[in-house]
Structure formats: C-alpha cells, structure tokens
Length: 97
Length: 381
Ligand code: SF4
Image: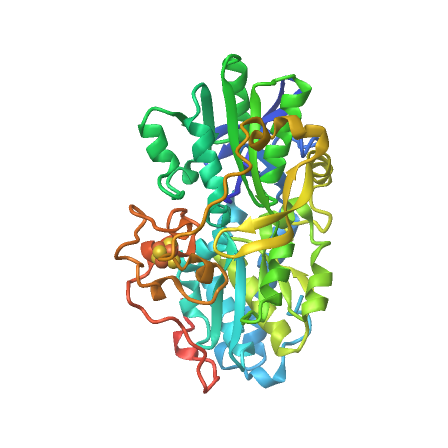
C-alpha cells in the first residue's frame, strides 16, 4: 500500500473547492487530488499515492541521474576496465555524488 | 514516459553492479527501510547480485505489517458494530487480529468496504448521512497527507458521521530505535524515497551523525535501488556517514511544504506500538486536539482494548532484521499468504510474503563471509 506511482497530468479541475487533476498512468486514468501541488500544470509528471499527488517528478534530475550512471561505466572502463577495477584506488572524481 | 522506463535498463544496472563490486572490499549490512523496496529488491533478485558480503536487511517499513494487534482488534470491534460502514485499504482485510480478520467480519455481515483513497470513504459518508463511516488510517508519512486532508475536508464540510481510526507511524524514530537496539547489525540505511518526497530530508543528517551510519534516500526502480546501495557502500568504504539523496527526481530537500503544513495541523506526535517490535517513543501521529472529534477510538470507546501477540510468529525478529523470513519454522508451511499467521505474510510489501512469492524455499540466508573479497562472478545481471 506504500506504492506511489508516477503518472502524467492530462487535465486539471476542481471538486468541492479542492483542486483535482486527471492523471494518466500508462493508459489508465484516475482522478487525483492536487491540493498538495497546487501549481501543477497539464503535461507534468507527478507521483500519486492513494489518490493524492505528493510530489512532482523532475525530469531534469532524472536525466542527470541516468547520465551519471552511464558515465560511471565509461569512467570505470577508462580507469582500467570495468569490473576489474581495483577497489583500493577509490572512485574517480565526479563519479561520487 | 520514456525516461521513467530507463530506470530499469539492464545495461545500466550492470554498470552499477560492476561499480558496487569494484568499491566493495568488506562485508556490509544495509537496511532498506521501506517494504516497497523490499518487494522490489526480492522481485528483481537484486540482493543476490550484490557482492557476497553485502547483505540487505529488510526493515520495518511495511505499514500493514507494523500496525499493532490491538489496533487491528479495535478495527474489528468497530467494524462489527451495527450501522457502521468500515472502510479500509484492501491489504488490511487479511491481517490477523487476535481471533479473526476484517475479511471474516465482513463475511459475517458487517459492512466492510475496500477503498482506493480515503477521499472515497468521505464520499461514502456524504452519501450515507444516517450511518457512521470509519476509515482505517494507517501508513507512514507517505500516506498521512491523504488521511490528513480527508479529516480536514470532513471538518470543513461538516461531515460529522465520518471518523478516522488512526495508526500512523514515522520512519526517523524507527531508524533511531533500530540503531539503539543492542542486537543491531545495521551499518547503513536506504531511506524510503516516497516518505522523503513528503517530509524532505531534514530529519536525517542528525541521525546519520548521531549513529554514525550513512543514510541514502533511495527510489524503487532497479537502478534507483542499485544507486542507493552503491552510494551507501561507497560511504561505508570511505568511513563516511552522511545523508545523501539518490532519488533527487522525486525528493526535493524540503519535501512537500503544503503537505507538511497540513500534517502539522491535523496530527500530533505520539508514542506508537509497532507490531512485533513494541512501543517506540514519539514514533507516530494521532489526531490533534482540533480534530479530536473525528477520532474513531474515542467515538466508539475502543481505547481500552489491549491484546497480546501469538507466540508462533517471529515477524518481530523479521522486522528488526534479526532473522530472514524462511528461518521462521512456520514459513511456507503453516504460514502462507492464504493462511497468514503474521502481518508480514499478508501484505505484498511484507518481507515474508516477498520471500514466499519470489524466492525458492529453503534457500540459505546470505551470510557475511570470512573472506571478504567481493564475489565478482555473480556480478552480471
Ligand atoms: S513466516 Fe509467517 S509466522 Fe513466520 S515470521 Fe513470517 S509471518 Fe510470522
């Protein structure tokens, strides 16, 4: 029940004075309370838990995380071949966040 | 939603695994606090791809599992009262109370309804003004904002036939309690990402310093888990113990200020009993004085129900990371998801259920080898 699922806001409205949004979860759409993210815009991705958007997903930091991981592999190869890299040398600068 | 799928990319996962193997020189015991992470780790077999000495200890972060028996018994009592509509998340229905569960109560005629959101319970209350509608408000900081908003709306709209049976629990005091335990083996924590999406990361630097443990905020996809583990192992190897955020796309440092403000208004900190663990001081929320009229325990006078745990189930030890599920004699025999003896076998996020669903039985628990060289052969996903 702790599961919180990312989805895309496709419409924004209001019910009983509460901001609500329609959120698309890969084809399944649900009404979601937006009271905790009042300035959400259509098109944004949010994390939804038991009918409430609790946080926005930041695409920029998602990309940065993926880029760091991708770079990590390359650096490891450069510094002596991936899996065979010696632990004692520590991590190259820039890998460690 | 392409970049979301990339977080289970097998090639990148392989790189992270290589990196974890490369930095690991000694055995380490790391606890993932959240049951959702336990589920994901076991399901993807990530714990088995780690260096031989890196052990994942499954923490108490499944709210269904830690809801104390007496709260379940109070729920059963309230649900059995005439005129009550008792609403709950589905996974609470099979959690065993002292002598039955909500499912059994429902089958004997009580009006027990599964809802997706607490707001659905409020709608039911509006539609049934002559009935008492109770919502079973359990969960961690992730779920609490939804329940808080529902009570707030009930008060604002004057829905007086609605009440909340509250058993909210909080992660930071649980981390402190685990570290204070004399049998504690945990050397680093993956903090629950979505708890931090709500609460932010402000509570963790102090804990990391006080107990000298790295705490790394971690998400739920395979790459998220591996990156959380990599950052934790790296800190351990370098002798550091800091808060780090490996899930920045969903966790700003400040969390969700609007949700935090609502939580402060509706709830107040209280001592809470954790099933299988016992009372942890200041580890939960109850309704604040301003919302006391919506407290189901008071409304139905069930506060004096106190009950004791069955002796067969070892979920307390499982929840503290002292044993792995299959080390319990009842695991997979008397205790299965269809016939659960303990809450950790009920919820999909419970460690016992995760092992039952995804692990071959009888598999030995990973133990820290005396020769601590990383077992590199198993590194590839
Ligand atoms: S296997 Fe069943 S009885 Fe054993 S600890 Fe897990 S839930 Fe309890």
